[in-house]
Amino acid sequence: MEYRSKLYVADKTRYDEMKYNRCGKSGLMLPAVSLGLWHNFGSNGNYDNMVAMCTTAFDRGITHFDLANNYGPIPGAAEENFGRMLKDEFRPYRDEMVISTKAGYTMWPGPYGDWGSRKYLIASLDQSLKRMGLDYVDIFYHHRFDPNTPLEETAGALDSVVRSGKALYVGISNYNKEQTIEMAALLKKMGTPFIINQRRYNILDRTMENDGLKDYAAKNGIGIITFCPLAQGLLTDRYLNGIPADSRVKTDGRFLKEESISEDVLKKIRALKEIASGRGQTLAEMALAWILRDEDITSVLIGASKPSQIIENIGMLKNTKFSAEERIRIDEITLG
Image (cartoon, rainbow, N blue to C red; front, side, top):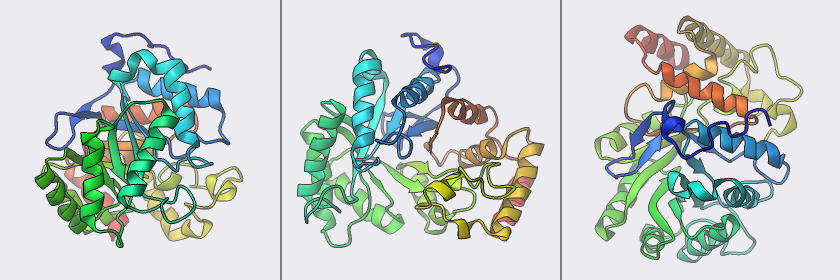
């Protein structure tokens, strides 16, 4: 428990290390670094380590904790574990926290436990609130675009959860530019506080730039929070000299495949590491800082397996500026 709760008191010192950005045109401020509970918070995780990670994050100004109904394993386990932490550790601090969850991927069997119907989204949020022991979440996301449900129905469900008091704001995740434009128009007409889109984005994956969402969101007051900033660990020192036996590639393999770690990819990563070293940062620190290099991104979601990683990642906030030469060289390495 080396890292557990050293500033865990109601004073302002926990916010000194963190930067906070306005989420779109809303009044909500999000920390530049948010903690995602996608991995390492499920039924196969160590609960004491979960507590140490979350208290370490909170003690250093990470006020936003990001979940989803299906985060596990097993689905729902991350919310259950986080609910236990809310009860045992964070009860006095609820109003200092932003808690988000999502629904959109398969959660339970049958035709009503997936995608974007009104029945699924509202039922899922009710279940999430019960698992976490909450009356409301701060942000409720539709987790992925549903091509078979009218977008008006999905938008109406999001509007309903706000009007019922079960969510303060709503967002979307994995929506491209065109889908975002359509959803934003529907929610604006309803007067729903739609504030954010969550998308995958990192130095190696520029899809959000290529489909135009990044620029569109910045110009139209929509917040962006990014996930997979380290490309499932590729943008760290972990794979520079081969694939470790205890790596996620070897032990899991669902999200990062061994064939993805080609010599061409490793060559890019080694070149990026040289730039990071010149900046006085680790490769991971530079990769996180790069996402925040301009003011288009509201927050970057980090994952962690131990508290020390959270502390190291927050350290990148000391240097998020990139020279024109660094920007050009990074693009040459990754896009050339």
